[in-house]
Length: 187
Ligand code: ATP
Ligand code: MG
View 1 (cartoon, rainbow, N blue to C red):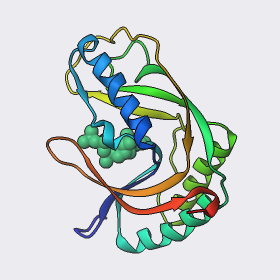
View 2 (spheres, rainbow, N blue to C red):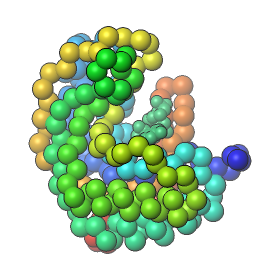
View 3 (cartoon, rainbow, N blue to C red):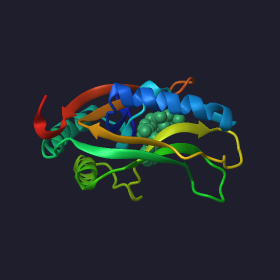
View 4 (cartoon, rainbow, N blue to C red):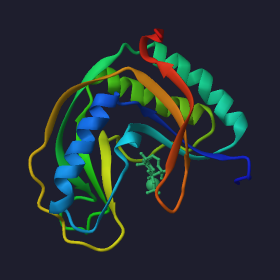
C-alpha cells in the first residue's frame, strides 16, 4: 500500500563531477548517431545499486542505519567505464541505452549489502541479477537497435553511497539526495 507521504527512493553510487562531464561529452557525440533517444541530464547520472520505489518515511530511517553500516564497511574502489549497450538485449526493441561499468568485488559486496538492507527494511527481494550500468538514454518510441560505437571512459573512483528520492516529472525524473554515506566511513 502506498501513502502520500511515501517517497520514490533508490540507492546509488555517486559519480565525480569530471566523470559526469565526460559522460556529457559522450552523450553529445552519440546524439546524432542515435535517433529517437531521450537523453538523460549528465548531472544526474549515477550507478543505481538498488531501486526501492515507494518508500514510507519509517523505512527511510531504517535504511539509513543499514546503508551507513554497509558504506563504512566498504573502502572506496575503482571501476572501469566502457561499452555501450541496450536493454533488453539484441532482437528486441531497445528501451534503455547504457554505458557499462565493470564493478569489482568490493562494489559487488556493497551492492549485495544494499540488497540485504532493502530486504531487512521490508522491501521484496530484487529478482534480477545486478548488471552495473549507467543509463544514458531511454526510447519512448519503437526504434531499431542503434549501431553503437566503442566507448571507453577509463577507470573512475567511487566513494559515496547515496540514498536518493526521485520525483517523476514530464521533463524527466528529478533526483534529490536524502542522505549520503562516504565509503570507508571517511568524510
Ligand atoms: P523515468 O522513469 O522518468 O524514465 P528514471 O528511470 O531516471 O526516470 P526512476 O524510475 O525513479 O527514474 O529510477 C531511479 C533510478 O533507479 C534510475 O537509475 C533507474 O534506472 C533505476 N530503476 C528504476 N526502476 C528500476 C527497476 N525496476 N530495477 C532496477 N533499477 C531501476
Ligand atoms: Mg524509471
